[in-house]
Length: 241
Image (cartoon, rainbow, N blue to C red; front, side, top):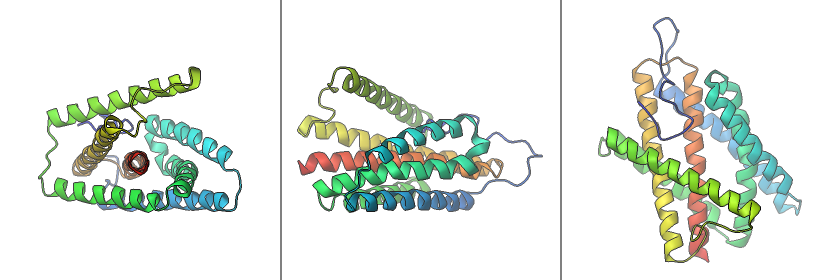
């Protein structure tokens, strides 16, 4: 069993009979909501600082780098997820809140649109998955994982070009038809990763994974939701241009 989400590994939910209380889907949902509150709180704080005319650039950079560090720690040491998960969500909120505030000042209404679309997409995909209209087959999983990794490589290349050559991957940030098409594709892949995450968490609960992995499953779901929100923001930004 695999997930397209890089933080949810192949053997994450392995469990023996003597590991105590098992994880549940309800418990994972509750912990996802708990992490979301941390992210929302720090996002609102950053947004408020920006609205007061304060410089939030340092806060955003620290948040983004810190979130990446704690995401990697959680990915390799999933037993630490009850502690590192909330820290990750808080730090991610600093970066997301700053980005959202800046874009909202340039394109009024874009944040509420992006948030509404993110949760709408999650709701629709959850329904389609629960109704088994979308089935996670081996080929489906392989396709989404491969596309996700390809996007990750393109983003790394784009970051390298930007840092060292002051350039970007062609069309990736363009607001033309090709650029918008690329963003639509990335949004679709990010959204379909949610389906893989739903499947992974459901199977973990069915297989009786240890209770602490509820935090880890919630963390993995938050990573995908944040990615989806950012990509929708990027797409809406292109359309507004």
